[in-house]
Structure formats: structure tokens, C-alpha cells
Amino acid sequence: MSKVVLNEVEIGRALTRISYEILEKYDGISNLVLVGVKTRGFFIAKRIAKTLEKLEGKVEVLPLDVKQYRDDYQGERTIQPSEMLKNKTVVLVDDVLYTGRTIRASLDAIMDQGRPHSVSLAILVDRGHRELPIRPDFVGKNIPTASKERVKVNVLEVDNMDQVYIEQ
Figure 1 (cartoon, one colour):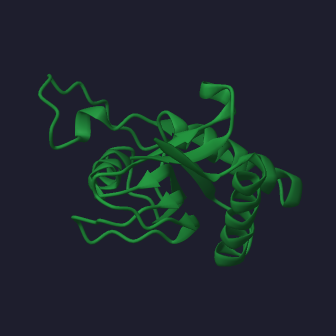
Figure 2 (cartoon, one colour):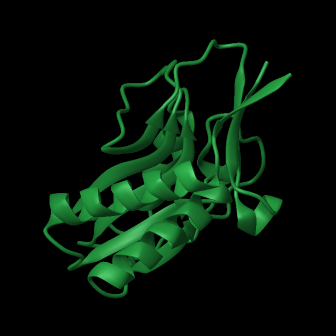
């Protein structure tokens, strides 16, 4: 059984609000880079960037694959450090915040791309149940859930529809 908690319009409204909050916090887009956790976080970051572009100008959006940084990864690590995020203001974007383990892995991955000036976190859905001391700076919607429930995010670019739902 599943229950829709955000529809297409509500997702759009939440991402617009997050975009305005980013502009307010950073007083514009100077030196700003959006880093979207693959897969759905990247598409959410691109949507935020589209709104920011309408308001202030073009913002760079980068995809982030954190698989090799996860604490449960068993494969060989083939990480190529760079300096692409050095001294940038980074907004890390993901779809759902749950335990915080993906965000911890994301922070490690970001640091391998150069030490940014600052990193903040934008999340479409915060469902609680944190295992690590991680708190988002920008939240589309807080949705309290039971630990046995699953929050699923569908985005048009991947799933041919926009919705957030809870599976029992």
C-alpha cells in the first residue's frame, strides 16, 4: 500500500521555495555550485538551477556519484581527486534525507574535489530517523515516517512523473 504525500504542483512549489531560500542565504549566486547526488538529487538540483537562472543568472550543476564513498561499499575505489570545487559555495542536493549516511559519503566525495568555501544541504524530503548529526539547511517538506516505511521520490526525468509517496 502506498500514499502520495507530494504531487507535481507541491514538488514544484517546494523547489521554488528552496531556490528563494538559497538566494536569501547567499545573497545571490556568486561562486555558487549546485551538486546533485545521483540520480534524483541531480535532477532536483537542475530544477533548482533553472529557477535560480530565471531570478539571478546561470548556476553550475554537477552530478555526484557517492557509491565508492559509502561505508557499505565493497568494490575497488577508483577516485580521481580534483580542484573543481575549491573555494566554491556548494549546495548539496538530494531527494530524501533519512539516516544521513549518503550525505556523509557525499561530503567525503565533495572534499576530494577541492576544499569548498562552504557546503549547505538542500533536501526535497526530510523523513527523520537520523543516525548521524546531519541537518539540512533547505527542506522542501518534513514528512515524519515510521522506520519500516519507505519514502519514494519519482521525478519526471527518470520516472515519467513527479510525485513523492510513502510505501508501507
